[in-house]
Image (cartoon, rainbow, N blue to C red):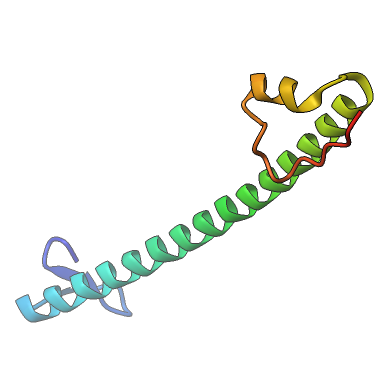
Length: 96
């Protein structure tokens, strides 16, 4: 179709008018645009799931860190300050 013709059912060459060429180009572009949008949607959903999973993993690691600090450090709040975590609402520190 790029050369201005197509093949009919018998395999014979059929010339296309400029309007037919434009119509074919628009249809092809429409299909490609839809495929691109679909790919992007899947990509964004995958990233969103990865972010959710990583946030949950991060919360679990912070809880484990707080538990470990409560068990081993006399003043966990001061120690967390060195780590930049002293105002983290996810951490639950028990007084020693």
